[in-house]
Image 1 (cartoon, helix red, strand yellow):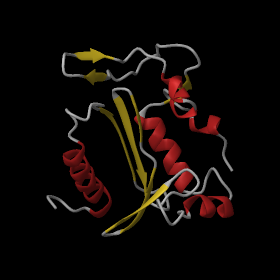
Image 2 (cartoon, rainbow, N blue to C red):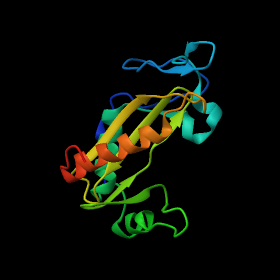
Image 3 (spheres, rainbow, N blue to C red):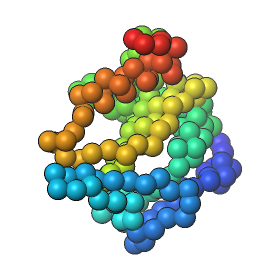
Image 4 (tube, rainbow, N blue to C red):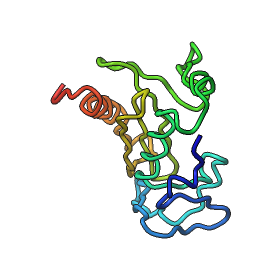
Length: 164
């Protein structure tokens, strides 16, 4: 098994109590009814463990490809991680999603003004990672349209299906 240092992370780190990050950093905005605010500089650890690790999309790609490709965990543990609980489809850290061309695994996340997508095939040979600026306001949210677009994006990347 390889260790995390072997992947030469380019921009991942733990925030601790700092509101700043070394480059590359994507600008994040939070929109409200009065104005849009730049929330790039904030300490995301307020959301607990999910916010204390900040990474680049390239590091997410490298990590998820290695994880799904069996380079980080013994086969038995990876199989257990991928086995979804029946109610929500969540295994031990990843969701299983059926597409027209097979299963993909993912774990997307978000915090104030920023979101990340992370998908991969079971063998890790194909991954999709993306960083997004998003609106966390129900009155301004484009959630239904975004979910449709996200599904089309996943179908395009993993099934080669254009314009579905």
